[in-house]
Length: 187
Image (tube, rainbow, N blue to C red; front, side, top):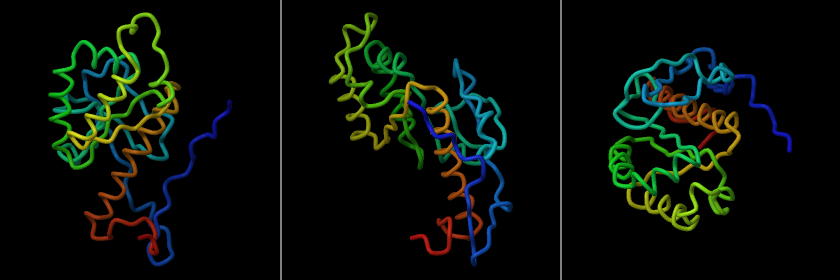
């Protein structure tokens, strides 16, 4: 299967029919220092300005200037299942912290189909229905959306870059008094 490359241009933002894209800075993504295999966002210069590393109170990624507003928790399939099976209480405490952010999500590096498939040897004690049900419970209890992406790291990283940059763009426009819309006729 082949995938479409991410856009090479910036998100188009217009006011009065003219692009104001160049007036909007690119966000600086802050990566938690405890992240073991962090996304670099190097291939997404159209969306992300730069990255820095700092210890975060919740999540693995945030945006400079929005540290108390946005947090993205990233989980590989292996990490997610291990966390839900062996570190469940710690994970739920982390979700309680994550829930305090205005914009928050758990990005899973797997599709829902991957989640519902039989797991390999090391996860044999984890049932796919239990794992999926636990994520549904997190979403229902804490109001944290779960974003299923792909086992292909580059696609998961693209989704994270897009999600973070879109939230930043809307926040920046709102902060500058330009409303939460990309183009004049958006609702």
